[in-house]
Image 1 (cartoon, rainbow, N blue to C red):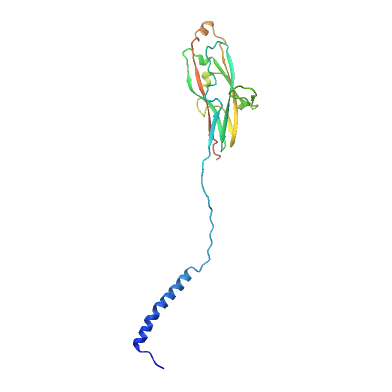
Image 2: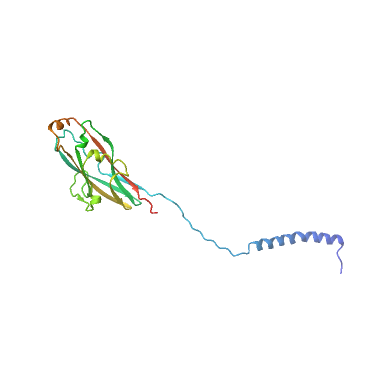
Length: 210
């Protein structure tokens, strides 16, 4: 048998060494990924706020604009308020922008506000008051000066708990120029007097439950 020369043996060793290294590397690569795996995912997480929208049917018109008023005059009209909420909310009515008079006319305009259903800005036909006294009669024959003190959401008149969705409530408002107990001289002093107030309804989302 012919034995390779020492030089040939070195060449053969040099040629086989890279193959052995590559093969060993392949074995290490395969061994490092030889494991069981598993995955799970909770997808589509997102957060969106709720919304509330409050409108009425006055079409930008004042509910009462009374000129040349006389002692004893009275009038009743309605306004329908509609709530559109994606979350439970509360609606309350209060006054803003009061106008006082030197003669104190605001003390002689008596206001009654009743909450119910049916009727609207055009007229009160079909209006039916709420049977719950706590929510039905909001103001009963109170002077405008007192009503004007209900001027924040916290001190507002009445309260209407609105579920999610669209719902409406009608408010029947009556005023009367009451001169009961006044002398003729006091009544005469009311000539040319003017008073007024805006009634605003506000909706807020319900307080979170502790």
